Structures are given as structure tokens and as C-alpha cells.
Image 1 (cartoon, rainbow, N blue to C red):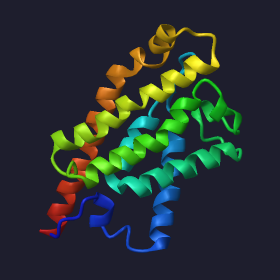
Image 2 (tube, one colour; image 1 turned 90 degrees about the vertical axis):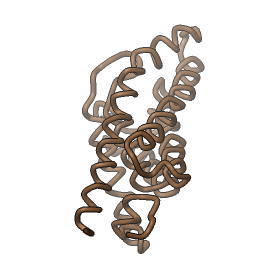
Image 3 (cartoon, rainbow, N blue to C red; image 1 turned 60 degrees about the horizontal axis):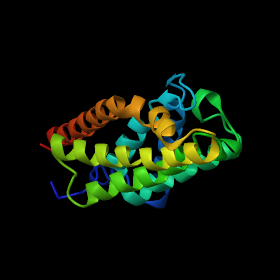
Length: 191
């Protein structure tokens, strides 16, 4: 098997503009669906979005993963109910979770970039590639929450970071297991 850096490239799914567009559309819909699996917490709900974004980044690579998140945000801003709890509209990008939503683009891009730079195989490397960008997402999420609410910085940290740290570890592990399993299945298919 030749050395592809992303699972989607190894599957030949990035060979044409049409397949790339279908990957972006499919990925954005998966993120929208994962936003509906939510534990209501205020002011930031816990969802499966970051798990989906990690898997997309690990599978697609930087540019395609970032394009997928731009498409997702555009869908939500245009009124599709893809944000947590079926939310829709551009006002969500300016609300308390706006830092997380906009940070999804950077998270997807960074995850994909790490894969392109050698974190593409092996459970440990995939875990690191999923975890570090997921942890970095807390910075814009917390700072935006602090900027648009009356919360002090420490209260924004307690609301937007602290309750989600263990979930970030679990989701990074699940994303790594999923993509490592995809590589293993591909190796078996190709013999």
C-alpha cells in the first residue's frame, strides 16, 4: 500500500472535486447531527461535535476538514437547525458559544495538519492529533464567553473548560480508535 497521509486519500475519496464536495457535505451533516446529541449545560452544552470534528480532521486532512467546518457554520448561519439543540441562525455565532463554533474551523484544520505531518498512524499518534487541537479549542471558547457575558475570566474557565476536560480525553480516544480501526480495516481489504 502506498503511503497516504489521510484515510480518505487512501480510500481514493479525494480524487475529484465532486468527491471532495460530497465529503464536505457529508461531514458537515455529521457534525450537525452530532450537535443534537447534547447534555444541556449552561452556558455551553456538552455535545458530540468535537468527536465528529476530530474524526473528520483525522480522516480528511487540514484543508478538507476546515472546509467542512466552514460549510457547517454556513449551514447554521443560513438557518439550518444544525447547532446544538436544533439551533439555527447567524446569531449563534455571536452568542456565548460563538468562540467554540468559530474555533471548530481551527480545530479541524490543526487536527488534519497533524495527520499530514506524521500523526496519521498508530493509536497513540492519532490520540495526540485529536487531543491537542481539542484542548486548544477551549481557548477561543473561554475567551469569547468571557467577552460576551458578564462572567469573570475564572468563571468563564469554570463554565467553558473545566467541565469538558475529561470529555475531551474520552472523545480524543474514541476518535483515535475509530480512525485506527479504519486504517486496520483498509489494510485487511488490500491484503
